[in-house]
Length: 194
Image (cartoon, rainbow, N blue to C red):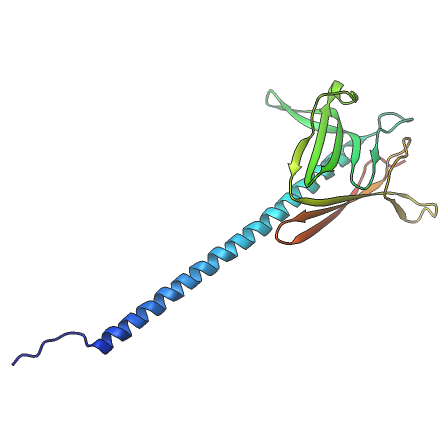
């Protein structure tokens, strides 16, 4: 009599168990990779947003200038900043520098940047609207540095209302919100030394 060759029940159960363990291991590794990627992507976006904002503010401030010897047009408080600066404009395959009035302020959770160029720069009744730079901004704190009475160190103010001089440095503290609260700080030195 011939014996029928086939898998026994025990062999089928062991094979099924090995298959399930392999599938669960692959699924677990895939799921961990996806969640890790999502977390890293969110963090990268927050850091990228902060870098772009701080670089834009840095560029604008480094190109700032005084309106005249008697009036700088530089004003600022803890959350708002306005000044005159040179900005790049692309025209006919060339980069042209134009003068502009630049203003930064926080509107809700959005950081707004106003840039009025050329003849509109000094027009307070201009219809040019500020543009949103980024959202999910919890706060922006600005401090203005000037040479103190000791002439040895920088003293910091929360408000800059001196119309005849510009600060020598500005501390920008940017707080962004995503799953956690992240703070970024940069000190920007202005080229205008009195």
